[in-house]
Image (cartoon, rainbow, N blue to C red):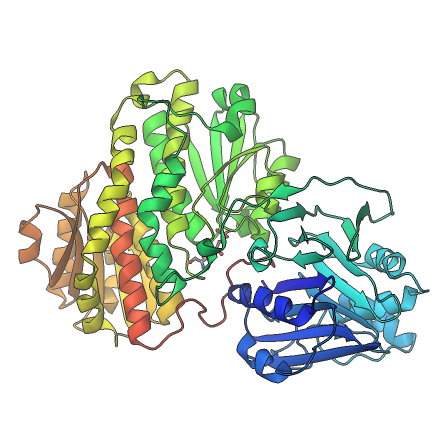
Length: 608
Ligand code: AGP
């Protein structure tokens, strides 16, 4: 949640800060603010709403300042108002901070500071940081920051500047991502690499409890006790065009259309030449442990959790290893039993989801091997894991996850094939899973070529108040995912159900106003789902079916059919989810919703 950018150098800070924070707007967009040191003053502007509002406010200002910080907010403590927007300052207005995360002991600290005479002007937890730094400030900003951070409990990604130590930009991290970008005679700070990619590809990923003191020419990294830490400089592999819309109306649509390529990229370099044997570089040092795994627990949230359910079906049926899939937020607090030889797989697009990261900590504490499936290189989850597999899907900017979901399933298929190889199940390596996986990019393309049909269906149902999604077997998680996509971007109430469960309650909702999307591909449970379609029809429900090519029978039973190419059951979700992504997208756009930035949501949920 929230986005942070900081700059120190020889150039005007404000253009860089604004272009950087615009790229992070998807992380939070209810208010924003900027602080710049200019002509011996700490200048600050804030606004409520999108960053364009802030831009209007600062138009013609900040023409000289070469050091500054900026923030886009997704409210956790206090409503989205000017007072609560970051940056926050101390009583003197000389120290300015921007913060991502949550300060858990802020109430205690606020009371203590108020007793000492500090005056607060917001309802946020973040403001205590500025006052706490003020209380320790004796001329050297980083010393005061270190002292303050020792008192803080909770999570933070911080960028700090001070008028009384004006040639420094301080960055500090605990539990909330932060990177430093290295330029020529300039340094950047950002909560996400997308913010600085236009300016530099050389980055340093800060770890928890690290502080970077940046001047325009120098970077000094220490721990909270001022012990020097040498950091590696990484080169970012993404290009700027990857994070721009490239002619599409929305990032979400662009990302839906990128799926043939992102699925291909997930496989790239992972199959042995001209064979179906899979090698995964990120797991090679852990092959011994992985060979002996007896139980797998998947922890994830939202769309990534849905991908985990598909992984459960796939790994259990192909490898016979028991798999459970848990909401990370539940797993972390319920004292789960972890026996020897248990592997915990954390799935996360962003790699920053707080609940998933905390579940990994719990798993590690209890002795599990922790494997991550992640899209963002350098993210907290990827770095915490014992081993991992990257999606290589490129940045996903739209808040609704699309290409990451299909890449997660592709990677879970690769993991299944990899485990089969190292556990001596060579048969599996030669079976349909590998062969059919390689066919997917082309098949996805044919679905996308047929998109108009989905737009027509969307037009007919765009004014619905409710929508039900049904699926069985591998398509049950797809029904969940279809419903999540629709509700999060169109605000239509939608529920996903295993089709047979409908008669245990939701069937009461069905009438002529209830569109029911049924994922009814020709698989091992096809005949069962036909009975469920009949149950809906008997109550006047309108049925939109996603069916396998060549199935003419189904068109006589339902109101609309969208056909997808045939593949094996385990891989159907990669194809069947695409029309559901498009359906949600078109319905939301037709209702006038901002699909890339749906209300109340943020791209990565870095708070509990
Ligand atoms: C999906 O469209 C979501 N916006 C959301 O459910 C997301 O999948 C969830 O927050 C988990 O995120 P992660 O994959 O980055 O961990």
